[in-house]
Amino acid sequence: MQLLNEFEVALPPEKTWILLTDLEKVAPCLPGASITSVEGDDFHGRAKIKVGPITAEYKGVAQFKELDENAHTAVLLARGKDARGQGDATANVRATLHPKGGGTRVVVETELAITGKVAQFGRGVLADVSGALMTMFAQRLQEMVAAEDAPTRPASADSAADDARPQTTAPARPAAPQASSVQRGRVSDRDDEVLDVLALAGGMSWAKALPTGGALVSVVAALISVFAAGYASARARSANR
Amino acid sequence: MKPPKFRYVAPRTLDEAVDHLAADPDAKVLSGGQSLMPLLAMRLAAPSILVDLQHVPGLDGIEDQGSSVLIGAGVTHREIERSDVIAQRLPILSSAVVHIAHPQIRSRGTFGGSTAHADPSGEWPTVLLALGATMHAVGPRGRRTIEADDFFVGPFTSTLAEDEILTHVSVPTTRTAWSFQEAAVKRGDYGLALVAATGIPRDGQLAEARVTVGAAVGSVRRLTDVERLLSQGPVTDALAQEAAVTAAASIDPISDIHGNSEYRRKLVASLVRRAVRELTNGA
Image 1 (cartoon, each protein chain N blue to C red):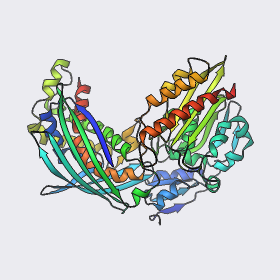
Image 2: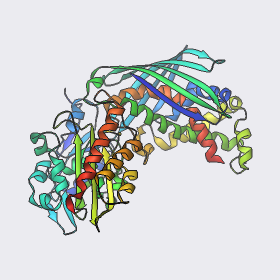
Image 3: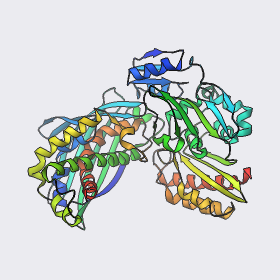
Image 4: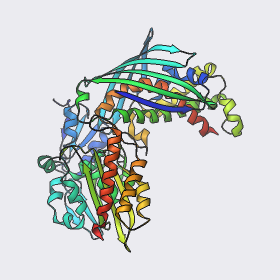
């Protein structure tokens, strides 16, 4: 099945690109998800999911098949497997960044295949889960970016709205190591190890996330963790003003 | 399929049940089990311990309290189906209950269990949100009540804490105009779309309308645009048509092998139209 998601970012495509392609940095923003190891081009990760009574733990591998910085196109192949053997999922994700105003529009096309018992369950909910996950993830990243800003530029939050844009587009690369440790601290402080939809979703209209959702999550966790980043940072930025 | 390993307790008091839940964050309440057991069998849920409420006293009964009916969480769907009090005071429940699975399942499954399960395709969440019911819960921090508007927050997700137990639901009987509509491939299947609408007939109009949708949009939620529309005039066919159009425009339905987004949008529109037409019934 195919999924199409879009979101916008207040960062220019160059900065968004840097943020989105830093898998290791971004993955922990999905509570419960983490990159466990990197072997060559393979990113191994896992995600623990909790939706109401449903819990699952997924392990997966993600690999960039294509990283075209000039065209701002990334293709990520991810495979996820449920730790309890409920099913496998494979996703081929193509993300393209398009400049829009001073920001970026990110288009994510996902080709998803799910096999096993999960796929047979009487109800499917994949499209929504991906959409909902993306929204939730964006929230997390928003906080991450906020945390990133805080120690380096304490004045930015209080400064005039006109200043916010130029300041926040300041060097993302150099700040990354420090920011990422700050952000990891925050994430793990708050959310233990499990993605709890209640805690995250709040009043948000979450998808009808059943089983299939779980399978998708492993894959999407890896993927979205990459591609939703910009959206969140955009939100964080506007929140900062 | 066999469920994963879990421990099982069947406490005799509510306090004891709460203690079990408070002692283990992976504990899960079992109340009828008609939704939970399939999840276990599919190994989609893996609680460490099941706290069965079947021997806990005080969770039964359907009590007419005048402006509301207090329904125990342990009351089965079948009891609601057969209750005269419900038939007379809350006929929307009688109308909805027959859509819940099949008689065998209705004989085991409980009102409180389904409500706490907060399945977006669940009949009770859709109906209780439309009625503005009040949930009564007990936990280690004592008793509290939660309005339906604050209770259902996502798929399978309510604001009930992990260590709280839903004991009763207080359902107001003042909303005498009502309609429940469900579209499913077969009777007893999970619905593709559910719509519940209620209101208080007043001077030829409908006051305080509440319209909810389940199943089609991924969670149970109110259609506030439609509610606003209903407050603007007497219930007519034209208003029903307008409500259908408004409903279709205000939702973002899910899409799966059972029905794509556009199909579900049309279903919801049709159900809303039917529901609004029926809202003259309590006048």
